[in-house]
Structures are given as structure tokens and as C-alpha cells.
Image (cartoon, rainbow, N blue to C red; front, side, top):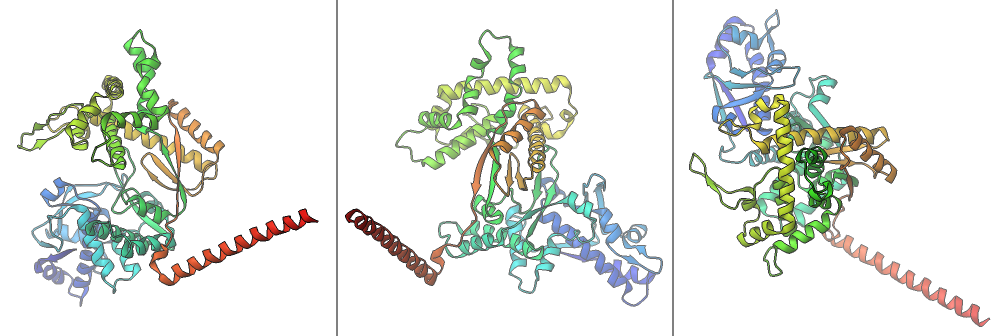
Amino acid sequence: MLEITVNPIVLETLKQHFPKANSAKNSLDKYIKLLTAQLRASEMYGRSAWMHSKGFYSISVYKQRNRGSQIGSQKIRLQNWLEDNNLEIFEVSILGTNMSKKLSVVKLTELVTLKNTVTVFKSQMEQETDNLKELLDDQKISNKQFFEHLYPEIETESETDVNALFDFVPIDMTSLRNYIEWLQKESIYIETRKKLQYLTQADTILRVAQHTDGFYIQRKKDSSFGRHYYSGTSVQNVNKELRRAMLGHCWEYDIRSSVFAWKMGFAKECYQSLKLSESFEKTFSVTLNYLSDKKEFMSTVRYYTFKEDSNVSRELQEILLKRALTAISFGARDKTHGWRQLNGDWINPALVRIIENQDERIRFLSCPFMKKFISEQNLLDKYIYQSCKNLKCDFLNSEDVRTFSGSLSKSKVIAYLYQHAESQVMDVAQAAIESRGGKVLARIHDAIILQRRLGVDNKYEVQEAMCSATDNKYWHLTAKELEQFNRPYSLDKVEIDAHQERIRQEELRARGKKKSGVISKIFDWMS
């Protein structure tokens, strides 16, 4: 938790100008309360390593100026008075704009002492967990007060601004409570640290939903790469079980192999530029096979990579291969040797970090399907990257797509282009779904979660809209049903006994019906 202590000279000077009883103190207290809430929000919802090193925070200066407090008969804004009297509480390093919804980057002045009860050595997620757990454990904090702490600006913003800053997700309260109960009493195999994190996230969602009559509010976060992100706990960054618990029964539609499907949208142009004698189908045969039958492709690669006596479980094998393919899709090289950075740190290639066993990694890269697959991806990457350079796209000047030394990074350029394309095609999918009466609960990058299942015809029409809007015929949606998190029977002995008794009675009735049916048939036959 962050606490601000202001140099007494600020209050004393304020009293001299505004001597009315308690006027100066009340005005400064209100100002500091809002600033503290903004600093806590900045700490909780993400400060970069650069901001930590410089002591920077992101806040809304506009809000601090206009809603911090006013003082005197002329209603002077306290922020203006502090600036006019050289008593600024913070200095602005980068001024945000209200139009773009970007916050300002500020640094506290020497007139302020900031105390943080959470150790600076903890990760951002651990800090968030500790901060929230402290509030959740405080029985004096009501749901309303907890809500105001998480969203200090929401009550003063207009409806338009709130919709621009937040997304609202409907919560299945019963399912979420069952998950929390399961975590507390049944989840014996989850390590303590993770269990604490999951419980804190679940409790946070529940407390907010209780206050809003069934909705959790996700704070939008800008991304220069085009994806839709959220700060803090969100449907995107919770584990799959908690996601299932908070949403209840619903349907998740994923774009099948989305990054490879996107790249294949450039394949025809790439093929024509190569002027090869072999056919298009042969040039990209493995990628086409991967898109049409991913299960068979992964099974073949797994067979080449892992031996029967491998100490890696079948489930983990599939996870590692999926990670390896994702790394390859964004330009991971088939090198097996690392390198040393200028600061002395040793860096291993992505594939070395994913498939740590050297023999298994060599077999993976030696698999004829993978060799051809990587070759095809390299062709597509090179074409997409060069086409972008030829067009002299504006974003190529951004630091986001450059290396530490300042040179263009092909993998970052590919990632930038893909993530923008992914957001655009998902916008098309959402619009097509909603125009057909579907209710979208949430979006997670290349997946969209719906309240109800799309019919066969609707699914086909949504896919056609995606393909038509992007001139890419390789987009394909796959459906997965998510079940509500039901309460485990083992939590309650009385309930378990009653459940078993119900099963016994149903079996007796079933046997009785079967017996009476057979006897009836016998009598019919005898007569």
C-alpha cells in the first residue's frame, strides 16, 4: 500500500492564504486522497522497469487538476494554486492527453515522502496480490469501498468515458463461489503461492461483481502492437479454471492456428514473387497440411521428437511443441547455441528455453516435417517483412519494433503486423456475431467467448465475413464448450450421503421398471 506524507510547509503556506478554519487542511486532504488513489492504481496496474528506475508514475493530471479540490471563495483549483506558489506535489515528465486517453507520466517532488509497505523486490503480480489481499482481509472495508479503491475515477467519469476506459464482463456468481470453495478446501495439489494468487483474483472478481450486481469491470490498457489488453486481474490473465468459473456455461471460439492462417494470406503473393517451377501447393505443402489437419501434424512431430521412454509426460509434450511452434511463428531461429549480451548476461535461443533436452531438441529440428515447415515460414516472414519495408510503413520508425541497438527487428515487425491484423479480424468476427443476435462475453486475443453456441450456418457466415473483410481464405473458427464450475460433492458429508441415496433409489426404481416390463411381456406371451 502506498502512503503519501507531504512536507508541513505546504499546509502552513496554504493556511496563510486561506485562514478559514479547516479550509486548508480539508482541501489538501481531498487532493492527497485522490493523488494517492491514482498512484496506487498506477502501482497496481503496471509500471514498466523504466518507470520504476526513474520513480515515475502514470496518473491523470486533468483529473487531479479538475477533481482534486477547490479552495477559497473564488473556488481556486488547488493544483493551480500549488503550481503558482512553487509548491507542486509532482512534476510532469510526459503530459498525457484527454482525447487519446493516455495518462501523464509524473514524478513526485521533494515535498513528498512516499511509503510503500510492499517490498520493491516482489514481482508486479505479487505486489498486486499482496495489495488486494490486504484489502480483502480487512473486514472493515465494504464492497463499495473496495470498488472505489480499484476504480477511483469511475464515479466521476461520464458514461462515454467509462465505456472508453473499461469493459464489463457478466459473472456467474454461483460458479465463481464454487470455485473459491474448491480452492479453499479441495485444491491440495496447487502450490501455496499460486493458490493465494488464484484466491485473491477470484475474491476480487466476486467483490466487484457483488457491488455491481453481477459484473466485473476490466480496465483497458493501450498496446502499440494493436491487441486489446487489460490492466490487473482480467479474463485474459486468469487461469483457465478461474475463467471458466467466472463466466459459467458459455462457448469459446478460437481462430485455428491464427498466426499461420494470417501468414498464409500473403502466400499467393509470396509464391508469385519467387517464380518457382514447383506448384503453390508443393511450395507450402507442410503449412497447408498443418492448417487442414493440425492434430495429425502435431502427432507426427511428437513421434519424431520424444521417445517412448521420455520422462516428459504426454500432456507436457504437447504443451512444449505448441510453444515451440508459436516461437517459430514469430521468427525463432533453429539455432541451438546461445550468446552473451553486452552486460554479460547469457541468453539462450527461444527453442533452447522451450525444449531444454538437447537430444529431443535436435530430433525436433531434424524432423523432415519441421525442417520444411520452418523453411516455409522463413519464406513468408521474409516476404512480409520486405513488403512492409518497401511500403515504408510509418510504424517502422517506432522504437517498439527496433532492437536495443536501434536496428529493425524482423520478429517484432512480424508481431506488430500480426497483432494488428488479429485485432481487426476479431472486430469483424464480433460485429458479425452481434449482428446475428449473439452475445459476446469476452475477447482473449484470437478467441471470442459467447453466451450461447453459434449455429452451423451462423458460424459459417461469421467465417465468411472474416475471410471476405481481410481477403484471406484461411481463417477458421473452432468451438469449445466451457462448463459452469459445479460444487464438489466431497465438500459436504451430508450432501454426499444424500447423493448416494438418490442414486441407490434411482437404481432400484430402474430395476423395478425393467422387471415389471419383462413380467408383463411374459404374461402377454402366455395368454
